[in-house]
Image 1 (cartoon, rainbow, N blue to C red):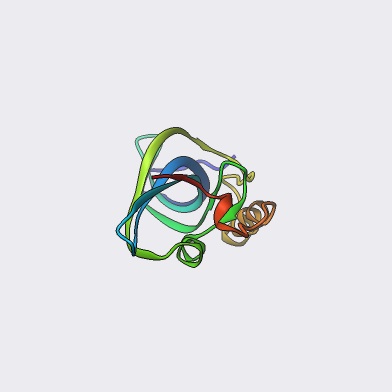
Image 2 (tube, rainbow, N blue to C red):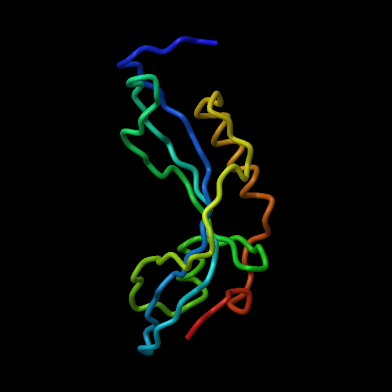
Length: 137
């Protein structure tokens, strides 16, 4: 196993997921919340200091959402199925955080990590209708 010294740097990739509500306003003035789970892959830059890896920066590389019935969608799908006026963002719905859905390891390089995430994402069918969303009015 490699020995690390203070000042060493590395980039790792990790996948995460948590429950959120997408908060949107429709053109008719109605506000809705779309309950879903956001899955994403991060590129994490770390420095080694005092015997530990410390996060310096985290960049989101790719993401997608899953409905409660595990149908995959993205922001463009929300625009496609709903007559949006404003998109206010996403809010944690306290549905838990978790990681390691797609098997990314610290030793996986950029290409291997993205491939694992893409394969995981493609396991899920794409949303095909507005009725597949879990909507709170």
